[in-house]
Amino acid sequence: MQYPAVTWLVAALLFAYGLVFGSFANVVAYRVPRHESVVRPRSHCVHCQHTLSWWELLPVLSWLVLRGRCRKCRMPIAVRYPLLELLTGVLFASAWWQGHTIAQVVVWAVFWMYIMMAVGTDLAAMIVPNVLSLPAAVVFLCASVLTHIQPWPNAAIGLVVGFAMVFLVHLLSGGRMGLGDAKLYLAVGAMLGPWLSLLSFVLACIFGSLIGFGLRLYGRLKVGQFVPFVPFIALGVMTAVWYGQALLHLYMRLVGLA
Image 1 (cartoon, helix red, strand yellow):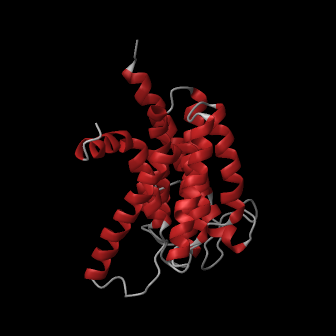
Image 2 (cartoon, one colour):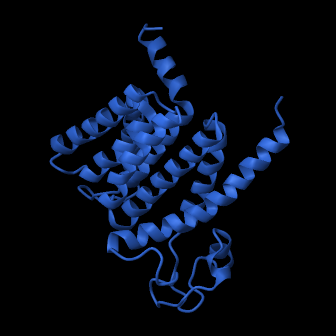
Image 3 (tube, helix red, strand yellow):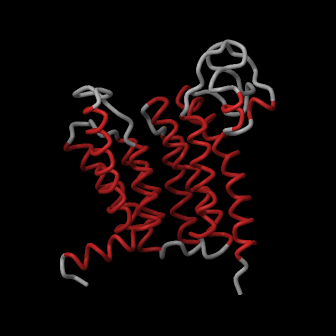
């Protein structure tokens, strides 16, 4: 027997937790590429070093109250901070429907946290640090298998395929696609398996091409200018997780395989 009210209450609670962890993801995104501690010193304005009070650290709400500016120096606070917090909240809530057990819900939430940290570091410094991607590959390979998100062969093959396909693009592009993107796909492959990993990367390339074309059309992107690709990977992974099976089935019907 299902209880919709309980389901939405749990999802709302996960959303609230996601906002908090999204705020932490912002800290990781700013400090880890600079080889700084994520614990000390306390959160502060990156312009004037003003130590933030508790009410200035409320996810999303503080940014809205402060109108996107530091209370002391009035320098702008990038809109990516509240957007990352909001998206992490949405992804945490979505984990409630993705997981079939509490353990799977936790693993999916942690996975989305990792993806958002990678998005943040790519936006802040255009890198995905090894200190994030390499341990994550091991963690999510084990977690995916132990919680039965993927059977062992699928997780292992997905990890290899995920890394190999992006590494190949890295080589063929002469390094224009970063090696960090390939390392990110170690964990993605372990969680999604080979087919959904492949689909997520195809979707990421489509999203990147469409958005890049739009930015170039409106003069916001110059020819040859590098852009962070992890946000597009995140969009591809989200789409593959939520709608991947339906998209694969549609493709198979179109080519006459189903």
